[in-house]
Image (cartoon, rainbow, N blue to C red):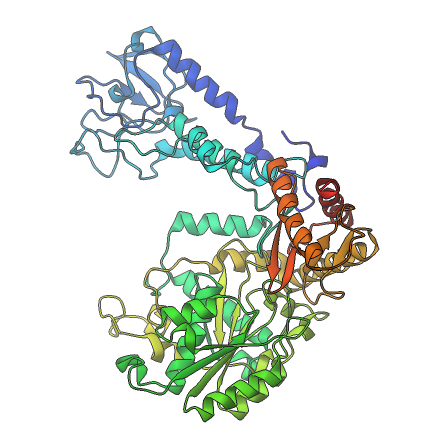
Length: 618
């Protein structure tokens, strides 16, 4: 068991003590030992292998503790098998953990000789290769073993500061280490658990405190539990009849998010959960097109005016991608210049709008950014809102990254003007650290999503149902099947309260401000922006070998090679993960992004010390 003092501060070991009391390795070893003692010929843990069932299978008698005894010819042989009475006409076999001891009389019996009754179906299986996957009670031990391993290795060990962020292997090497192949015959449960453990071993631990590589990180235990539950229930949130709880839950969460954004009339409008911020930005484009060119829903873009989308040169690439995907074409996305802080140049925006008007085009929308991907810049939303109002354009704000600051009284000023927007992208899986994916599209226009996207498929959205069909929300989505991403966020929100979310944001910003000051004071480190707006902190490490040479093109070329080499060192060592990138003519720099509120000042010092240790001799 992991020592409590080694655990990250965001975990309470007591939460998981019941799971950790079971030693997975010992239990598996016991199974293998029993199998070996029983037979060298038969893989007793094969769940439904291709062997032929015995014509006289032993009976299974259930005990109060769900430990069963195999009865062969009327005599109990002490075989401990779980859960259900035998039915010789049924072809569903016990799991590997359902048998822990066997005796000489069952030595030659295979798992195919032991049957477990399925109360729902007394017919024989139609094919010997059929492997049941329905979670009957006989699967309980296997499920528990797998979940215990996930909790122990991925959730706890994988987020422990003393463990590696990643055990790195090149692709050709990983293909040799890991069994990726799919085969005609089924694997045993023992092998499946080995594969589970290997998957965890060779994967990047994105919940690790030292994973600061992307705009997501951390493992929130409440969101994790929420995600597990929705996977267990496996709903599709398109009609109230198949997802009543999640339908009402979405309406509640989206309404509260609109209120936080500040839409008028107590957050009046609409919203949806969607698969990622890129798709949410696409919804903004789609709604703008319908509002200003509704005929395009039937006729498409053919024959109409040239519709122009404006966004900054530092905006997320999804604006380009969705414009291409939706038939606008990338040539109709006008990139607006940014200033030295990474904010959209509002003067250039108005100039470009006027240019397209003079050329006969139709300026359709502006997609502003609240928290750019690299620098974390917040566009001047009020000034952009003024231009959109002046030229009758849709105003969309991509707050996928920076939207979390809205819950903080101290930092929500960064998004002043967002309440004037027509629509907003906001991803709780970023700054608020809900599990991926958790992305929302919010709009002040109540019925526009339905008008824009509905097709009234009568096999799903019948209007003569016995309940209020206004809760059948699926037709306003471009998807049909859709995950219940709302629950993990709702569950986390319930656990922490809005005040808890606010403190989370405040702590993340506090650590960003702390490391910014450390960088200013530490020799060899230089900031790209002296005062970052968000929790993105961009900087260079300049090793002693080039620290005192002239800052010319040769210096830039040498500096450009430093960050990739340091990144390679930390990945192969497994000590941390931080990304780097160039920006236009600026050479490669590190971009540290903070979401976790459980990082400490010591962690900030560790990041800089580790980078220095890896790069000082370059």
